[in-house]
Length: 133
Image 1 (cartoon, rainbow, N blue to C red):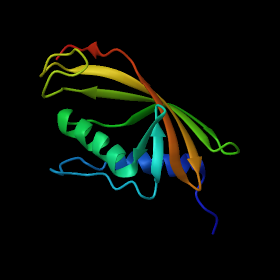
Image 2 (image 1 turned 90 degrees about the horizontal axis):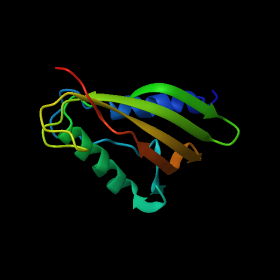
Image 3 (image 1 turned 60 degrees about the horizontal axis):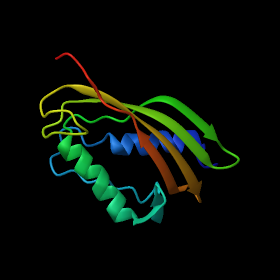
Image 4 (image 1 turned 60 degrees about the vertical axis):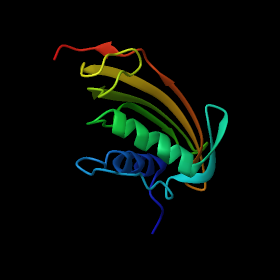
């Protein structure tokens, strides 16, 4: 049986990131998706630190869902580019938006994979848009 495509593998990664719904104290298990060490915006990180960054975001932004709007996958170079949309209500001030205000923002993120796992992430976040509640 052949391994899943990089596209399918990345979508499974997003499923893991979105698996926190109704699970207090959730921590992502990204061993199948992320290398033991990676570079996040050129900063070296251990996978455990990357997982902690994600779980901190989930705790600060209840209802956080990773929703891919645009997904480009290059199987040959093992690269993924994605525009992710987030619509949330932060429980504390976040990116200049007051707690309790509904907002939407985007992450434009590029990944490099080696041996099926993420080893490099470059991410840029948009300015949040405050939405009517």
